[in-house]
Length: 141
Image 1 (cartoon, rainbow, N blue to C red):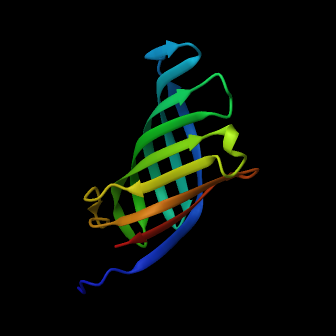
Image 2: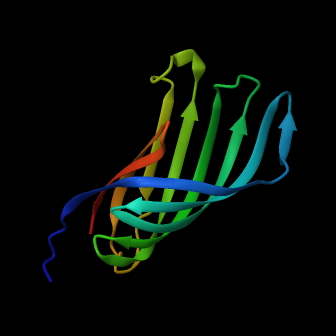
């Protein structure tokens, strides 16, 4: 087996389900901190499921919010079965304008790959549209 890693891009869509918010653990002056869990089902180049645990901050300004999350993805990618963890960091700020005020980074936690996905590295771009959520996952194996 060669030590050279191949840069790949996986594309597809996913559906979310089982959104389960916990009661807020801090709720003062209109700023709420809470925990949410949910599941995802991936289709396309990555097939499988995941469990997401996120910490969310909402404010009195609807367009200003933030979340961080960890997500364990179990499935098949490039014909290899296994799992890996991704870390989310997202924020929105209405004062910065539509696109400029949105940020989302979803990256693989180094060393989290198991099975055939051991050694995986990469970042995922997520887009929401009228047809649901899509992803583009740039990775190396």
